[in-house]
Image 1 (cartoon, rainbow, N blue to C red):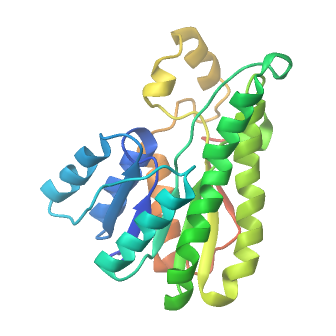
Image 2 (image 1 turned 135 degrees about the horizontal axis):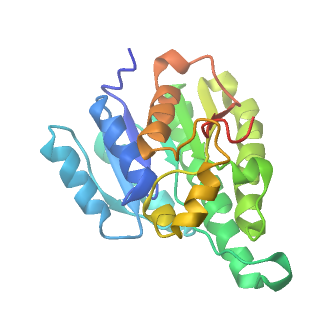
Image 3 (image 1 turned 90 degrees about the vertical axis):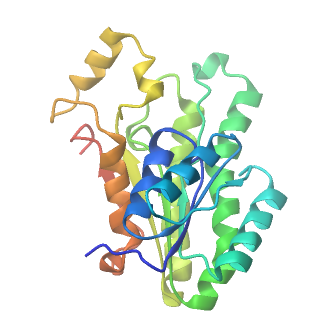
Length: 246
């Protein structure tokens, strides 16, 4: 079950954190991986996949640059013949209370987190429609479902991913393409480790399962949605939050 051999997957924001683990997980299931990022560390992810016996080709890509995105997708199709899976994981945060938030911080977060996902999804639709199959999976957040003070831009971008994905799911279902969302809660990453211990403990106390999630928890959900076994699942939000938001 959950075999991805013969599938080609693009993962954005794959140099570190959740994106890196998603790329490694899909590769372990047999997918050919194209980890992408604006950061050079993405090459290390491809090397790790290759070192484990998998196939990977790292590519530099800026999700806010349409030409960059289209060039990568064209290159992937030319090299591997197809694109089967897109994971929209690239994202940033620029936190501030709404009253004090700078317009450029609002615009930047929306451009990366939401418009970037739109640009990437639009770029892979033609090759997916040609194959009459595909999986588009976007990484949202529990914050996009319940809100969080100081994160109006981030929450709006993550909520927008949900509305966008549900709409796209309706548009492309007849072509055999599914579109879903994974919404993580508080995940143990470099970003959350930088928080003060009392803040981490406070957040963990709000989780019924009593702990922060792991990047592996998120990657497992993505992996399921990428498989043939999830072929009848589309337009859904799979929450991976330990019960933090029900």
